Length: 481
Image 1: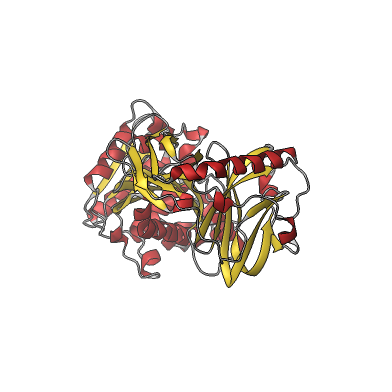
Image 2: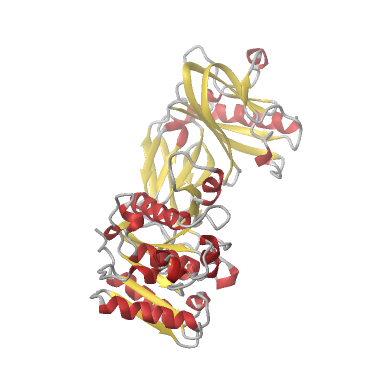
């Protein structure tokens, strides 16, 4: 409870400062990445005032002479403002249904909780942000809450009282809240206290409490990955909900960046969708980020979660989601490449050569700039053979393998295989030869001498495979229709 009292005193002191801000906001600073590089066109917002500016070419933002109103309007003139009441944020909703969300930030500006987000009916409510399991492990102390009620926004200092049973993880009707309303109103403090939010595409959002709204506030933002994005829509079964997700790894703030979709290996029975950033393959994905490429890491249903051809259909849906949505992340929708390693390369092979998966969903694969297969299977795959319950795929169900779909193709396609991969080398060479005989163009085949079944070599200081991969990307950049 001592922590709660200190928060109340802090708000009261801030309220006294409010009268000194009549001249407007005079706040400036520089936004950089973690390495100190200046970020132009970053969005900087004073949340409680709905005032936004953008950084210039030198990463500098300025609020000069912007108005400093005494806080945002409350949901209705008669309703009290949101308040911190012994472990809960108490507030009033005056419309029949209002979307209410509550986010919690650390004093350093890192978002630590998406505490609450749903529609609420009219009435008084309270939310205990630290009562839910996602708050476990947060240290006791002062935090910052960002509360939105419909279109109105509020910034509020709150306290984690340290593991006390504080009520409800969700929202509940707050009978008798008005009788507990001794806390000072946020409305009186808003002119002298706010939360400064900084957003640059491809970086973790920063937020920081600022007082008196003058002076200098510099920000360093860290690269971010957008995680657990559900790429399939409609009614999904449990396997699809858990497997059909992807992560977007961003290299930097920017626009029209080439995009590499990487399907992981694992024999169609395992694997990690973020293998490009894992220890097994030396974090080779970092090389793509350093080159200025966005790296997409999709999951897909494995054997046991689904059956052939579920994993191919999932891969097609993931690729379409990226093509349709990546521009919002700074990616160039005309420079999207489908790639994969091992089992992921089998998926890439099938999406490059078998038109079934595109025609059944009425989508043109020419929307993609190209395909890159890394050590994929062309004639046989023991786990897929078992999944199909056959003893010889090419005799019984040849349509399940790339070699069952030889025809002329003009889709840009780079095929890689390691020189020490045995039969995989021969099978990929044969497929390439047959495609060339059929009249295919924009088709490339490279054997990387001395390499086993791996993509770890793409993280090496000198990597012929990586160099050829990047050259392929640059050659066909912007050529997706």
